[in-house]
Length: 626
Picture 1 (cartoon, rainbow, N blue to C red):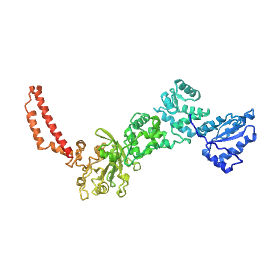
Picture 2: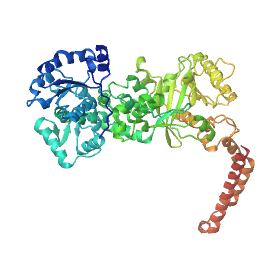
Picture 3: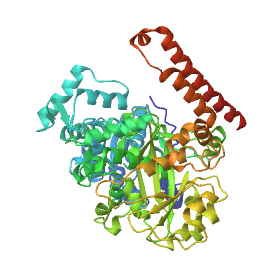
Picture 4: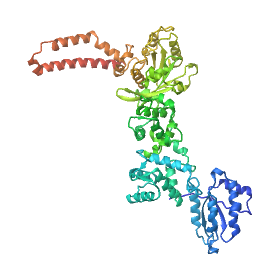
């Protein structure tokens, strides 16, 4: 039961002006036109005066529902309904007619029940009495609801899906017999309304038409409102854009595990040929519950695709990850169209989003739980930035050349594995005019500076960008010597790229080319992701060994823990101990008896243990010095 506050305004022609009446009509949610059942002139005045007056003071597209009230029924023995029915058929804004008696209170409570019902569950947006069928907007909304509820996308609501729908909308499942009774009603009235013992879209729409025709508008409205629709049959803004999500500065937004599971189920639902990619037809079917197509052709050059150019499963999840990172409100809207909060039984789409902690805290704690890292790519025109982005998606120069310029993307996102963990790396190509860099251009986890190794003027641009914007920041940077398949040319700059990197404590320039026979090598992207994950490592004098163990090709400082341990292992002391152990134990003549002797293996174990303890002790000393 729902308590509805009701404000009643009476009109008296003797006491109020026409202006006051017009003002009250414009503010009303429902209007009751009262006539006397024993007065023919008052009945005629309903159509000659009151309804035209109301229509003149309300917009055509938002007519106020009208209730006809036949008062003084206690004075007559006959009903006025025969006279009123043609009027009701003529004016669609009339919801119903109630005959009552104010004198003996007959049907007074019913009158206000129907008035409240006309406001809460209006017929007008749902049904056209003249054509005796639902309006297009209602059909469109119920069709989306059907497709969202069809969890396996077979065009039929089976018993499990119907019961889930029933619980979602009415908090109670249907009994088995009630479910069969519903399907039997559809079978008798609609051809193909039931198929394989499940309800088709045709049958689903028929049921709601039947509810409306029998005066059970509240049933259809309950379904519509549960799936986010307002009184105009548009998805409500509060449903599409929950207000509970707050994103502090220096925090990012990511999809959580449950959201990825939901998106995976949506992908599986529409990947009918099970090829782990969405064809154009499958993608169109997936977005059929949207009011517009959300992804353009540039998406195919933003994420991974198969040989036919279709978005793969990995590319599909990558695009959702990109949308969440760049525009979380748009992501919430998209999840709303897909019915995330309903299918996942969450309060809103906001439950799908994780707001990461402030990056400053990550730096202080020297650890992060983030899964998405942004790399802004800088470089002069023609340096190879676009090729660098496309190579991340596995496309060599040959595949890149067939992409039209209008469908190129300034973003590329895919996964990279760092220490066995799957992370997303988001590459963003920044326009060459570095004199007007915005905060967004500088807000990233790592900077990639790309220069053309075959162009002597290309490196100067990267050096200027670094010195002007990133030299004094804590953002790690990496130089990329693109087009390394071409003849390398000396750069016309005061320092060579290698000298520049050493001076500013950056990794040495990384040679890169996408002019390969197969897919370009992705090692460089793993290095970028690793540096983005561990910004406190890059540029520091001492770092933990495992980090540089994976980045040994970039370590040239000779001061980090990795370098110290390498020097220790190669030192004269360790080499002497190693040689003596080798001579004393491993180089001796080993007999069959030795192999069976526990004493022999004890000496081997002791020697290995001593060597390991020496190494560990040196490692601990270095950490204390740090």
